[in-house]
Amino acid sequence: MMKTQADLIARARGALAALGVSPDRFTPPGAGTLDARSPLTGAALFGVRGHPREQVEAEIAQAQEAFRQWRMTPAPVRGRLVKRLGELIAEHKQHLADLITIEVGKITSEALGEVQEMSDVCDLAVGLSRQLFGRTMPSERVGHRLQEVWHPLGVVGVISAFNFPVAVWSWNTAIALVCGDAVVWKPSELTPLCALGCTALLERAVVETGAPAGVHRVLLGGPEVGEQLVDSPMVPLISATGSTRMGRRVGPRVAARLGRSLLELGGNNAVVLTPSADLGQAIDAIVFAAAGTAGQRCTSLRRLIVHESIVEEVVARVSAAFDRLPAGDPFDRATLLGPLIHERAHTAMQAALSAARAQGGQVLCGGDRIETGMPGVWVRPALVRVPEQTGIVLEETFAPILYVLSYRDFEQALALHNGVTQGLSAGIFTRDLAEAERFLGPDGADTGIANVNVATSGAEIGGAFGGEKDTGGGREAGSDAWRAYLRRSTATINHSGAVQLAQGVHFSG
Ligand code: NAD
Image (cartoon, rainbow, N blue to C red; front, side):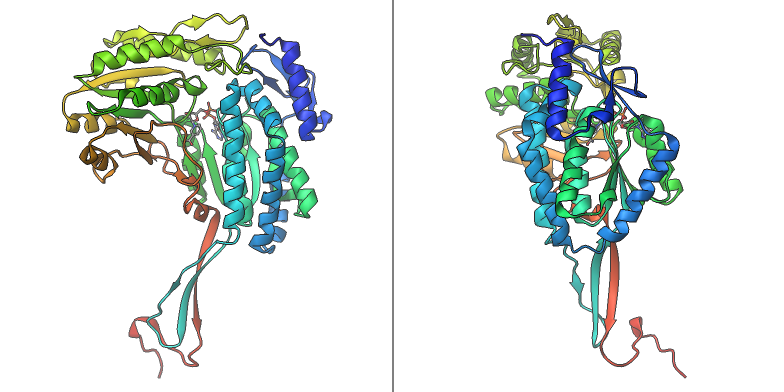
């Protein structure tokens, strides 16, 4: 049964109460400075108090104060905070998933998957809390030791996008906290309830484990609040996730004050589908990558580069799969297609389809609005055959549009693949080992993530996540991404009892 506005308010209230969010954090719609809305109805559910300018400074200062204490807490002890956070997240998995579905429209399975990712990164960070290794290098001088030591950095400013309203926060926060940093989070203005839910759980873990209260602060508001965080000299690292447009503003501002930034920006991801591919496997993966989260993932599949010998069969099978996708209430377990985030996303999708037609593209299926009985915007994913990779195909439209290009030889497929400015995630479907290795090699896919027989979305937490070129170059989550949250100190210890200068320099009378 479809949800009414009253159902959504009741469900959100229940989840917020279970997560421990104090009722004075939200108000009736219109009474706060920010409204929490649901894309299911398009209407405001609650008002939320945003942070005025003076309060932003005060919150950052509190975090800086807490950092001074937190950096002196041994890393394995810091790990206990993140361990408790992970336990609370697991306990409240459904409540957090409910808020994601309400504010972003993700289907339940994907919302639960996003919360699972939070638990996974907490596990990873707890392990890391005993493994923030520095290397020891051989010194060229007798009786000297040369060593690198990793120290906490300071206050980390986290700016996150609407489409992963809780996971991106946890990737940054779990790791920054074990590294001894304090975190100030500016979530998307579209997802304040998710932010309040996460913050309540972390505040509880802070109290229970005796961590300093200011070690995590949240700032609610729009880009202007983000800009204040970006400009603060108290914040040595800004980790910003969002559009390339946002990154182009944030990157130079942080650089101007010689701060560090970790940018996770837009993608324009492609799959190369070769003649040797297992088509059944490939098409299932392609449909999820293109239509999952209604095409609103940074890793969503936007370009399908298909060998000319199989392109007709592939477009027929993908169109049929798009047409069959059950759309509707994302709380209903049978639904695979939830709504777009807002009307503006629908307008942008229609503008992109018009531009594609104007440049010779043919919309093979989808693009039309689906009536679900709810006032939000549901659209059928669009499959668009384009004659060449120009104009709108080069842009990321944050909606379910999959452009199809055909290729004749593998070099041409690779050139098409890399012929965009973004560089987040890539996939090839092939049973040819040489093609697979080439795709993963130094002159293969130029993206931060490259997969064989796996499509572009659905990364695991153990690998470093991020992309190249206009995607910003940042890396978060697994592997050695933790190093971005620390400062490196190179230490030389002289236990020889004599002064010895490096490079054989003599400087005594
Ligand atoms: P957005 O750029 O509109 O907003 C993202 C965040 O940046 C929000 O919190 C917003 O308030 C803030 N912001 C915007 N302008 C700012 C400024 N000038 N200074 C400081 N903060 C500012 O993005 P969105 O619509 O919320 O999310 C969709 C975009 O995010 C897509 O482009 C998607 O590809 C990208 N994304 C990338 C990744 C990744 O890991 N690479 C992950 C998720 C989303």
